[in-house]
Image (cartoon, rainbow, N blue to C red; front, side, top):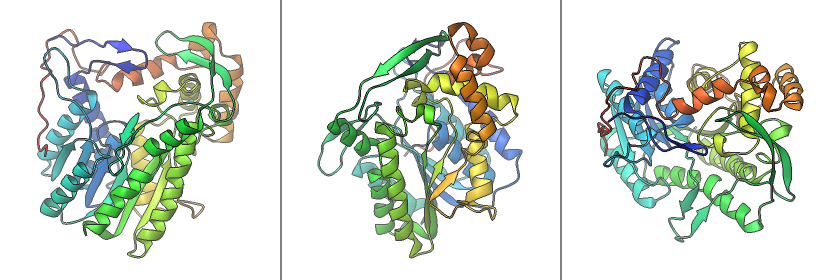
Length: 396
């Protein structure tokens, strides 16, 4: 079938297998062109099929020669419906890992469930013995608690009072004003339950309890802080409340793992185009302005560049993980540089529909959005027939 992008709001309902494979190859080529990483050896990535989780898996496998297990929830093609982008990404990853003789396995299912945790532990015992790096990069709108059975749903809302600011339709470049009403206490509670650190802690506890977490193991989860302009809808909003919980979890896990020489961190990453960030009001306009400024200053990084720098400069190769000695690793440092933020805010104050092409990087935002789903990949003929049914090698 001929596969073209079909969008609905901030999501694309189709994905292109060859385009996704091309995106994976670009990331692999980048990592292999860099200095080899000193570690780790056996890696578990929870939330491994897109974004920072996928880039972490690529950096570990193709930068350090690590064996990997990726856990993710994606769907195969069915009838006229394509598979999800994460499915195609993982299939391409597995194919390339096999060429290098790396041990690599994919587990598809609900990472929040005890069943998937048990399945993962059994696989580690059978194939790796232990893992020495656990990356937690789960992004989901809902979670079913494995003990109570309660179903939680996250929301993207401010806390305390309504928030009004500019936003942008990234498909058209139209700038408008949006007002978001504040979350209820229960919405805050549910968002923390979905996006906070409880499930990360459950993973580590069960891995450690089963004896499959190596002494000296590292675990890292991902967060974002951003500038004041986005704080009401992000850092001070429901998501930020969840990220605060995630960061508190890191402190507790670090203390727990330190008994065997292990460590736990939260990496505060740069703002990038992801399926999650595209859904947050205000953020697409901010990212578009940020992209333009950082590209002009030759500071822009994409997912794989950020993750390679995290591994090479902070987690491994003798780098200092957190410069301030805390549990936070700030690889958003280039984004938050004073000169960058001053220029972004100058443009923000001037931005309106007519001058978006001049002041922001709308095309860069759009390209990155469609890249998420395998579209606009260089060298792919999107008018040609493509086979949507693609198998994931080594799927357990």
